[in-house]
Length: 115
Image (cartoon, rainbow, N blue to C red; front, side, top):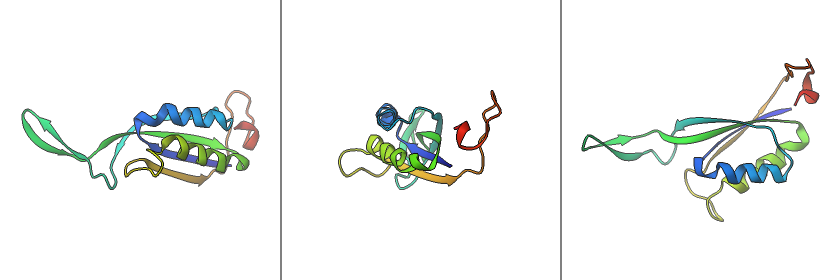
């Protein structure tokens, strides 16, 4: 089992959800978040003064999958989250983490069956 955490542009959320549906991944958690990488933020105005805003709005996806769904899930996120054919700085990142266990609260099922 793996936990996939993806940070994407907010405007790409619907495209990523559609791409995930195509590979039969239907369960995900979506969080609003802020951050910056190479983009280093952007200038903003506050009461007429220009200030540096170094945190940009992003969306974080958390998806728990069984081993056979890891690569299709990553590929779907890349497909839906990339800007254009070659992508752009700020398109996001995907992290794949090992997941020791999962428990379905309703039934008490554990492991792969709980996902």
